[in-house]
Image (cartoon, rainbow, N blue to C red):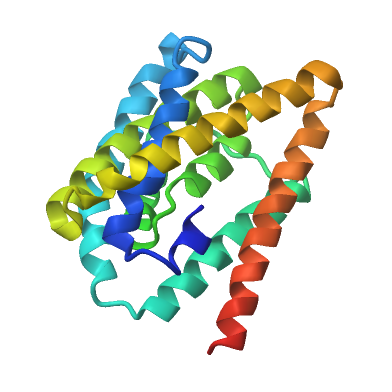
Length: 217
């Protein structure tokens, strides 16, 4: 959502709008995707560092030209999607240092560009951890930083005027969920195919945004 909505809203105003949708999805999946007991400390560690660096990212954003933010955001999304589309076999061993670094980078990017999920998704995707554990950890982490981002962005200049957009954002989000449920009830789609479609949409989104930036440079 962030690359396209950046054409409409300033970053501090955009962050709570996008994160409210993310938080809604996380709450919906909270009971289904419980964090494994061995991952709870990792989750808190990642959330702590993201909370520390998120306000720093919001502060840095004030000194970066809007065009540079749009380009960097689209570039990050493009890299993230293409990297996962290629199904890399690079593997990392989870550690306290990597957990802290990932949380910090996620918070910094979320505050400055409006996207915080890709660093955590790339990191967890590259570990040897079982898919269900990694998915639950990622879901809970994104929900946590979404809540942090809503509070931080509202206090640091965004205000609460973004609340007026919730009657549009939340129903649209749940409409997407219901549409997906309808499709999956009537047609069996492999997980890998769903992943490719989602990554293809991300690539198209970022590519379209970069094209607009080139046209209206």
